[in-house]
Length: 270
Image 1 (cartoon, rainbow, N blue to C red):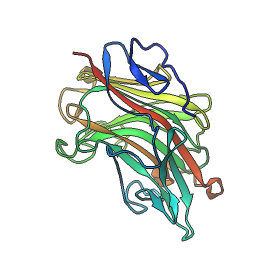
Image 2 (image 1 turned 180 degrees about the horizontal axis):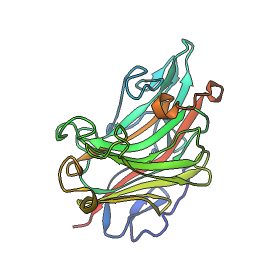
Image 3 (image 1 turned 180 degrees about the vertical axis):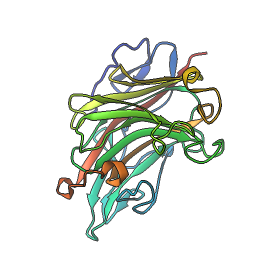
Image 4 (image 1 turned 45 degrees about the vertical axis):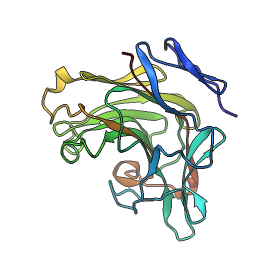
């Protein structure tokens, strides 16, 4: 059954979805959402990535569309999106990475998802954003990246938020990052949110500020602040890789699932 959840500290209700009242941050209106009420397939606003292992960050999973080895890598079930990671009969690791409105995206707004993370050394779940390809200026990291939530299983329940730009990125060790240890990030549901304006990026965990960076502090140029065009949300469950696998992986924890109760996007009221 769909879980009831009221967002703490948010202002007037915008409407209802089933029996759940959707509330918006003050000054914002709901522009898009997916409550994952109907399945088993994702709706038409979502697209899958299909790539083999070691595509990025030396990650060990193979991303597939809908299913692999006769099993679903992602499905809408029990009122949530479930992203699965498992070892196939061929010995390969399979998982999913999905994009919301990749060709359109949104420029500025409040982006949030309610997520339950899996446990185990080797896991690397994420909720993050990249620029729409048609407007993207430069390759990574110059194009920009916003990481709303990441966690690696060898540091249980520590979630992080980061931004990456040409000047500030993890290759140089200059990325802007904040880490927060929370109760039951693994095995419990939490709301991870981003407020993105022309001048500021702030992320939240259950309404508490995590990362807070201002354009005025980082610099006015594109290499410092490329966050001036549309980005799209990404949900994925990676396995191993440069960060997720830096302390090794434990395949005995497989299969695992990242569960997403909803994704909601709000923009400023006119």
